[in-house]
Length: 241
Image 1 (cartoon, rainbow, N blue to C red):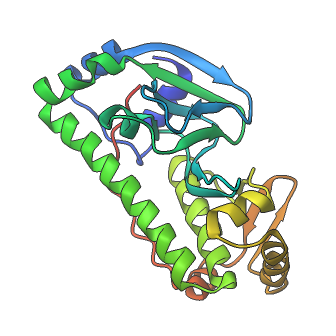
Image 2 (tube, rainbow, N blue to C red; image 1 turned 120 degrees about the horizontal axis):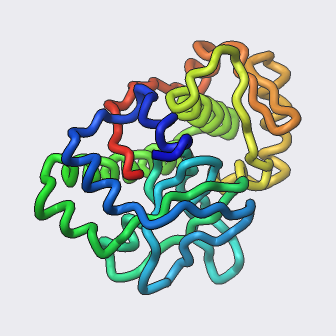
Image 3 (cartoon, helix red, strand yellow; image 1 turned 120 degrees about the vertical axis):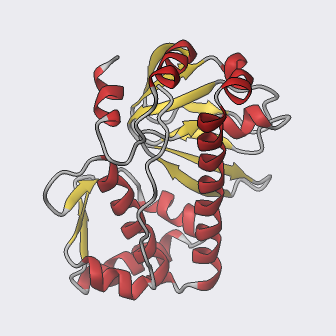
């Protein structure tokens, strides 16, 4: 077992698998890959996609319109699966791109159906992951459609902060934050100018700061109140790698 997957398995965010499940997961693994930031990992419209577990780094899933506008659907962090929806559907309806340099565990997608045939508990967990990703997209839709610009950004910052801390429960109030203002704007349906103005306004409230690719949250409760955000810890997730 490599160091990255071993570290993730030790975190409370991930489920402890049964020995037979671990043996099957080990058979799923093909190789470990590294890619730079900006690499297209899954291409929209592709009839076939590889299946990966993100082990290190950040990525995001998005759609692009004919006019060039982009909507970021969700951000992906270590432990998240990449390409599962594309392998369960006829083709890819979205793209996935690395936001930072990433390390991926490539999985044998041809064995995916064996999981459903012989390991129903693990298959249920994978289906649950798909449902949770859909829930994240639903939450983002509510965020985009029903919150003000200030509330939208407060929600996004706190959501990513909580997700990262669940994987890397290090002390302190700061996490790496590789998002540019353009990526924040594209995930929230805001203009770049509005995003910039709102971030500065939010920072003046003393609730957070962003600098040197780091996000610091000074007052989680106040930020959550501003965003009308309630964080319910997720049950431990399966880790395919």
